[in-house]
Length: 251
Image 1 (tube, rainbow, N blue to C red):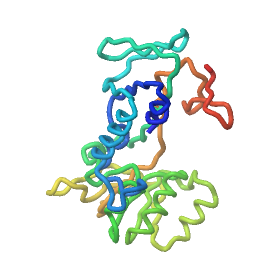
Image 2: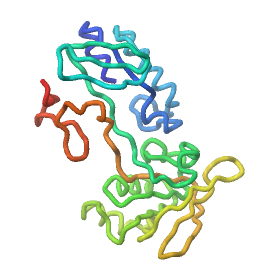
Image 3: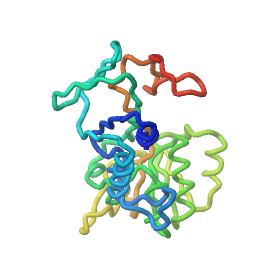
Image 4: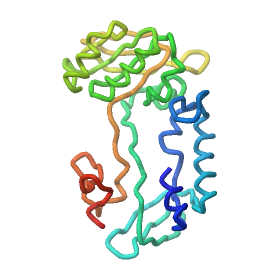
């Protein structure tokens, strides 16, 4: 989505990407404008690519080893050995969801385990879902799922929520949401059909198995900014920009 504007201005941008990003972790996108019936994630990426190239953008699929912002023009070193130079770089690397590291988590990604309720929650209409986390993101996902699911269980490792008081209050009084305190996920278990069947959780030294149709891991994100160490970043790794602009510490 960052490519069409500079391409339309005849700046001939080059888009360098390693993969499809977080869209690789979902199958169907139901909340993107213009697609009332939803759209396959791979099809969406291909449409983005066609739109960008129609305006004159070029696409290069490869990983990036490092970026040198200490010289002009800037240098981008690709994994295939090519070194590209540019007078301007648009950073659109996004963020990656944090994972629990529990067995079955990665194996069942998009097969019952997800990270985005607004992307994948609709497929669990009138079914039981589970949300892992205790911050605002987890509460937002739980509240969204409660609109479409028959019930939602939140698993939180602590005894109090990190979410804002207002968000926590909405969750606590929602009739469809059950909170499990001091509880951690031990394993995501698949059924004979290869999809998520149940989740094993540990609470107060006792292991319990929860029958759920879908699980959403919502314990935060890590910004993909490791390549841009020359830029000023905040304590969480996000690139600092001047308020109200996209200007970084290297203008």
